[in-house]
Image (cartoon, rainbow, N blue to C red; front, side):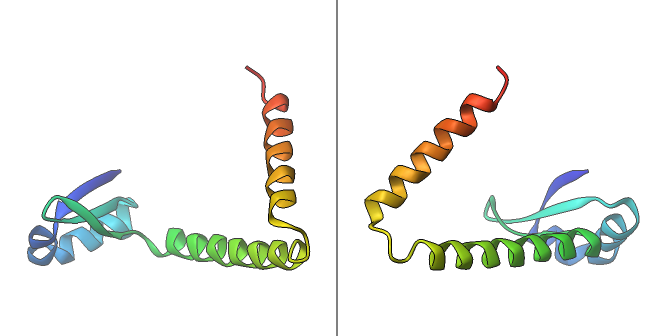
Length: 92
């Protein structure tokens, strides 16, 4: 379950919140002055997010290298074409 908790509550109840995250697989968004600033999540989710971030960085770097010699407008045109094409394949 995803829920919010003010930083003061987290500080006062950290052990209990860690148990909720570890055993119930809850996710807690920590707020400060009403704004989300951090989150408590379990390690399997954290590891998955790290893997996704690494993969995204790898793909981004690969794309930058692949298109580095292409004029910027051509890259945008290709992206627009790919987006249009993918939207045509999505059932309404």
